[in-house]
Length: 72
Image 1 (cartoon, rainbow, N blue to C red):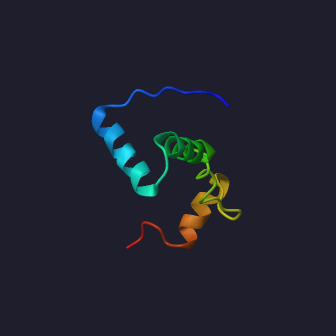
Image 2: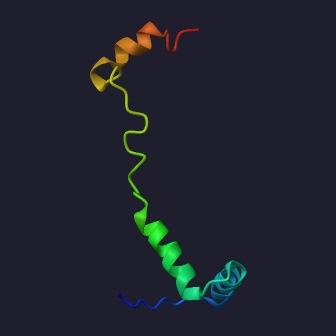
């Protein structure tokens, strides 16, 4: 296991300690859980979220024309 030291302002440290106390766990356990959760997130998971197999840059003008985009 690796040891990690984190410098926090007093208010943040107190909030974390209160949360750990409320959950009945140590501050170390809470920090481990929170950091593990954040580290597991993929910061780029939204890429491709709006991907389309039908709309490509090469046919965007045709698509806009079909849907009367910009015409009153």
